[in-house]
Image 1 (cartoon, chains in turn cyan, orange):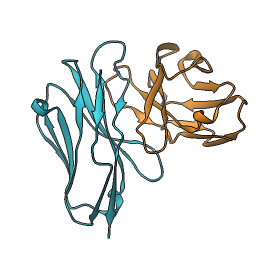
Image 2 (tube, chains in turn red, blue; image 1 turned 60 degrees about the vertical axis):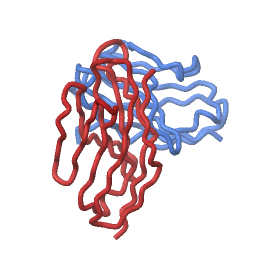
Image 3 (cartoon, helix red, strand yellow; image 1 turned 90 degrees about the vertical axis):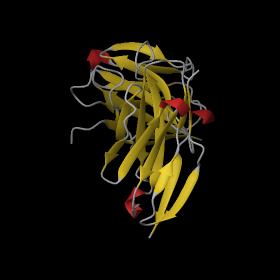
Image 4 (cartoon, chains in turn brown, blue; image 1 turned 135 degrees about the horizontal axis):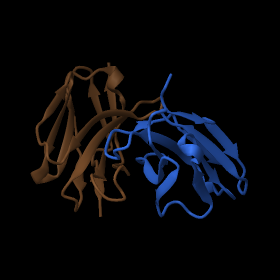
Length: 117
Length: 114
């Protein structure tokens, strides 16, 4: 069975604080892809990053960074110097790389991030 | 704007009525997905199309639900004899051929069954 767990339901920080959103996944597939999506109050899911299971290099994009650790089945997301515009629900998702279910995203329940001025 | 569009954005219907939603994917995308999202939950996969072929359906998709993608362009999702439990946001997404590529989501159709 495949599963994504985002244990943090809600996080509240003050602007300019750093914040890390946790994601732990379960899968029997040896090759898979992990994603992060942002869902702002407007509701439309916005793609942030995709990572395949063979690439454990951390990635940085501006104030965003991602830490993928296969040994602990985690794919955590850090926002540095948070801003009010970062307030949203963030989803971690998983999909196998092969087979009939390729592309069917399995989402966690999401973490609601509130950044206060 | 060449993103994914969905129509209508909101639908209120009475229990037992049929409803149909439409999704227009990004034009060059072969794959089209339907998801359902309820309050406080992540989206749950319902079904997907590769061009006009419906390749997989979730167990969540009861026989009251049917989806089509004629000609491999837009898609429709129909719910027959709606129930209150069908109230949710219905999301459409599209991607290019490789299923593990990023999916681009539409704004969703919020269904309320009274």
